[in-house]
Image 1 (cartoon, protein in one colour):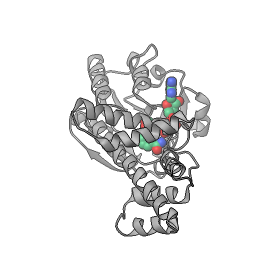
Image 2 (spheres, helix red, strand yellow; image 1 turned 60 degrees about the horizontal axis):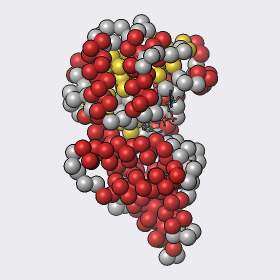
Image 3 (spheres, rainbow, N blue to C red; image 1 turned 180 degrees about the vertical axis):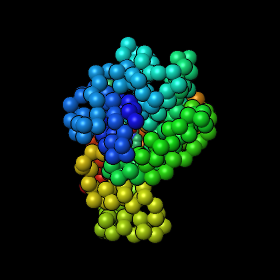
Image 4 (cartoon, helix red, strand yellow; image 1 turned 90 degrees about the vertical axis):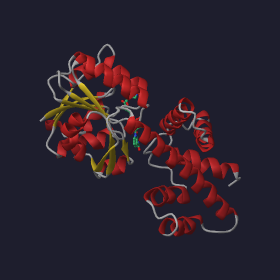
Length: 293
Ligand code: NAD
């Protein structure tokens, strides 16, 4: 089966590779089309616009960076709505606001096509290893149709209901939990280091006992070792996610003081020119710099 694929960034590239491994032929669009050179050439058709990528296919997967760019790819001058066949399902996997998903879902319905949100947890290594956790929302019929594609991308698919934006709320809440945990680990490990302990031993202890969970194990290692390369997730996209959390907290009257704190850590890193560095560095280096080490 041929499907459209839009967005070959840090996440989109390994995801496209897994779809190819699963036997799909991809009509790919990326702003810089040279990124498609990393894919198996016999299994792709390079496209010049999102509209080209969406022509004559039943599914389009998008993994673009943020709300406005996704909106342009759907309803802009060269947007996929111009060509996407009636009955087609757009699987939208970026981390975006629930409002954007609701808006795009409405635009698709007007055009006779459909939209589901399917944001993911997991960094590019997890995407490459087909270990993403996929969260879905939208109409049951279209989620069911998309299931084989989602199963080719992740280790689990968990549903959060029919409201198109529900999975985006879940994803925003989850990324808030991650950034709060990054700040927490950076502060704890730096406290331990400044008081004579080996921060790697501290991370190993907590990651294997009280905090025995992937976030504390995987990010814990990076923060303990002050290892900020390679860049898996850019700080400016992390800042975008902190903003999404704060916006949602404001519209729903949910005070989130921790979100404000983590947002400021990311804002500082971006302001100092670190927007393209990994978000782990914003927290790890931010805290050690403050502590004078
Ligand atoms: P990335 O910056 O590596 O890639 C972004 C993609 O958007 C690329 O395809 C790029 O060409 C496209 N893009 C950016 N600006 C554009 C513009 N002005 N016009 C057209 N295209 C443009 O980002 P990523 O890390 O792959 O993340 C993609 C999405 O997945 C984001 O919403 C991110 O929050 C989310 N996400 C990332 C991770 C991660 O660990 N990297 C994990 C889970 C979810």
